[in-house]
Image (spheres, rainbow, N blue to C red):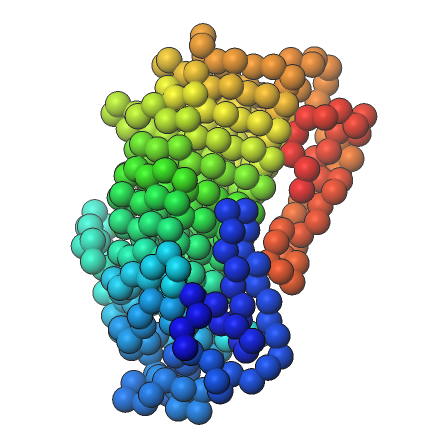
Length: 404
């Protein structure tokens, strides 16, 4: 019996709410569950049971129907073609895809031709992503995606949850959502070391929600670091995105010795285009540190950005860059600590209760800790960010900046 995308009483129980994804891993057997199992030792002619698993994730994806759950056993899955998801679940019966509990699944796109697109070349749309999705109502969790032409790429995707994915060392952005895509939750993503040699660093971000529109997209609990371009990029995305409890750092550094380096190096890039659409993105309780350019930038977005209780630290340029033409950003309760400069405000920007409004000196001695190892350490067992209760918290107890 199919169970609305819940792997109940056996391997994985997934409950999706507007606020979170809750995952339980009970210790029962899996024999009676409605699950397609994949293993590196399997056979695509097999029935896809625990005893007789499939060999490829694509075979399971092709068989999956609303309410099914795909369990991928541990191992490295080297792709000869990208995984393509085009069948949708339903609101009451989403399709689930995730790692077998306690096992590490690595999806490796190094052998994909598009991973090695030459300088100046373009990646055909269908080949974007080690995992390429054009479908809705999926629950994807606990996969590690490496060396792909993009890691995870989703275009025209609604009502999906992507939880605890790790995307690193891909040849374009680690995770990209674009096109007409609404009500997606990206939860506890780690995305790092992504680069794009074909563009000398111009466009590989940790997470990109760009070149499209769609309401209700949420990013929560992400860490986006050491990517060649930006941590987060909302270039030409015409609908508001909510970002909260997210950390971006070390982006925009040429760690790959690219010639004619073109990486931007912003922590959060909240728009852009010619002209840039006016979009009221929200960033709250988030931290940007040691990025090569700005911590948070409107990038020319004239919309009413809401930047609330965020912290920037040691970004090379501006902590809070909100001086684009016609900027109507509202900045409240934010903290800048030893950035190149704290803030750049436009004539229509509203700024209140921030560190630069309060005055005084906001150096390293003004906060309890600048030890970045607290927030860059391993995640907690449930996939949430490590606790960092003192990191960049004002020593005087002032109620500004993020709390992680």
